[in-house]
Image 1 (spheres, protein in one colour):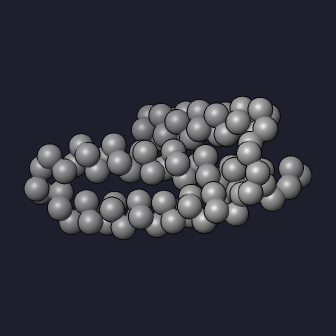
Image 2 (cartoon, rainbow, N blue to C red):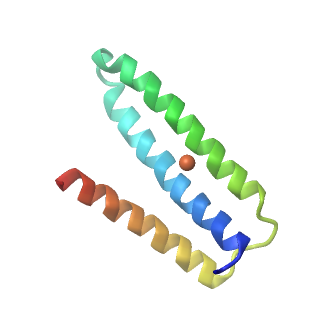
Length: 89
Ligand SMILES: [Fe+2]
């Protein structure tokens, strides 16, 4: 509907959020060595999501418009709301 650039920017925004979310979780769990196995899994998943983010980012060749920046902020906010809701369900 918005074209390839919008799709790639959306992926970039979502994966940026996911990367930061993983980083927070990894930071919390790394305080306790009982979680070393899950930490390895989370690190691998985080690396995979970073690769998705970078792939989308590398496919963009123009600077984002104001609409695009607003859209990506909304995507980040929506991702944060989804995580909050998931924690409560
Ligand atoms: Fe991904």
